Amino acid sequence: MKGYLDFAGNILSSNFGRLEFPYKLTFCITYWCNYKCKTCNIWRRRPKDELTLEEIETFFRRSNKFNWIDFTGGEVWLRNDFVSIVKSAIRECKNLVMLHFPTNGYLTDRIVSGVDEIIKAGAPKFVVTISMDGDEEVNDYVRGKKGGWRRQIETYKQLHAIRGVEVVLGMTLSSLNATEYERAFEAVKAECPWLTPKDFHFNVAHESGHYYDNTSENVLIKDKQQVVAEIRKYRKARGFPFNPIDLIERRYLTHAETYLTSGETPMRCHALNSSCFVDSWGDVYPCGMYDAKIASLRDHEFDLERIWTFAKTKQLQKEIWEYDCPQCWTPCEANQSLLGNLFGQRNSKKDKKGRTDPVPRLVQIERVIGDKSEQ
Image (cartoon, rainbow, N blue to C red; front, side, top):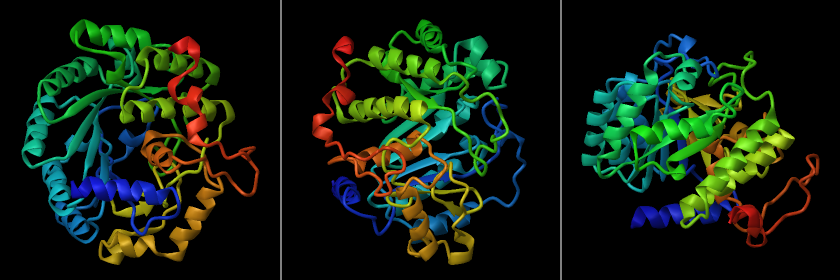
């Protein structure tokens, strides 16, 4: 209960000012990957000298005020010590209430046994996202792994049978699969009869120099209206939001349309206000998209709170607040931005982006629950 109260307090405070410590951490623990996705070049890296388990344990001992941690990669399960890393976070972060990681789902046995260990370690709200970018043919082409879809399905089936973890399917929309949702859904449902549209989650492909290393690719989003149409179709399939998580998901999708149409972040971003990104060498960034390294945890005794107070950190946060950043709308950053704009969208004083009128959330009824045609 204490953790949830702390989380709620941080969300509330983030609506009125910058937090003294980020409640949300996105932590890339390795850049090793066993897939060769065409929308991402992480797999091309051969990283060395990534943070050791001992260093990560030190980090969580000294920086332990997180409410929400997203572990990511690369493929997190390529680290043999991944379960120990997660256990360290659970043990040290007393107010942790949300734990999430994505996986390509290929290492079924390791994933299933590891998830069971994490649950036994006392994981809080625990969500696993398994990548699913199309039916078998499209998924294996986009993700560059023959036989990948079959492994992903098997992992999904086995995790679905485990109590204590919520497992969803994550579809990243790009020019390679922009019209493939319905076929992807039907292919999975043929194997998993319980499947509903709410078991899928959409993301829009993005570019990032320091994370995905894909700024030279030309497969991300070519026909934006095609992707917008797919998002609208999916949003309609999800139906009315009956709980807060569904509501946030719907708001994310609604604003994803705005982002795709304008190319601009649709609201004040809370990177370095409520959250930050740490890579597998301990380098701290505002988020996964903004290639602006702040400092290294290794150089500052793994004390994120110290780095959080740097003048450079605060200056970058101000720039992001005024939309002077690459502009994105990824769930890793969007969710805390949505939670930090509950009482009205505080827009830029510079008025550069046409976002001049703060719109109280309470009057955005149609944006939140859909227009009449979707009800």
